[in-house]
Length: 135
Image (cartoon, rainbow, N blue to C red; front, side):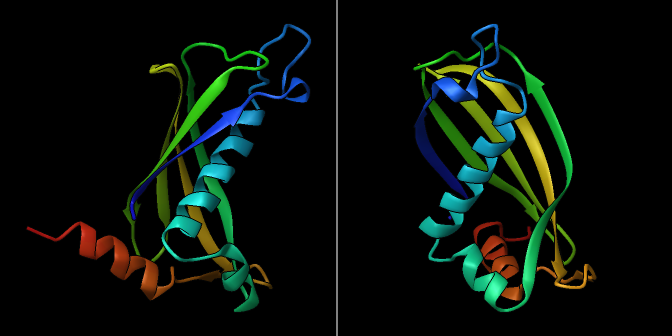
């Protein structure tokens, strides 16, 4: 599965004093999207961690189009855009009633418990390749 959608109701504590979702909270929404996409695909980050592999964010590019507010019902769309031996790139769109609020691209790397960069697990690369055949 290369795309997943999940809904989220904005909580009061996610908002800044102006009443808008604080910009940093969107990174948490992206993590929810990533985790649930992996779970829907039959995987779990916990299993990777048990194998000694950790997934870390190495780059975030985020564009804020419109604000979200307390009690809004949001849709978080997560798409795996690219998988290589060294990185996983996800794209996100957070929307409310079909209106795009935030779009983002997040690049992840895999490291071991000592912080050494590791190859993306072959199973993840194979899954991506099977859904994106080379022409």
